[in-house]
Image (cartoon, rainbow, N blue to C red):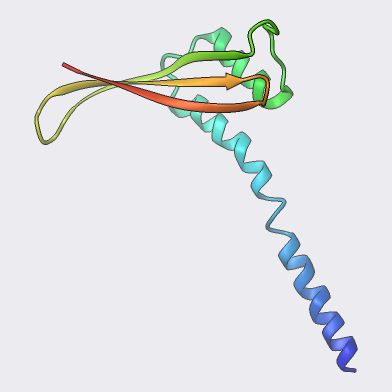
Length: 110
């Protein structure tokens, strides 16, 4: 009876432990889709298609170019402490050799 209970406990613990790991792989597409939706006021239509192809199909429309960097977003603001105006420009770099992406930011103060 102890073996049956332990094996039942192991079986009960197994599925509940196995269910959460499949969920995280569905999150990365959500992240890039949110990026395109929420922070892409400077993204050209052709680059939007390129980003979708990169993440969904792992497709490079320009095979001779293994790295592609694009401006995706720009926002202006004022530093609350100094009152100085600034502009933040966000970039997305797609690496077609490793199919990884990197975001960067440039801040210009006026």
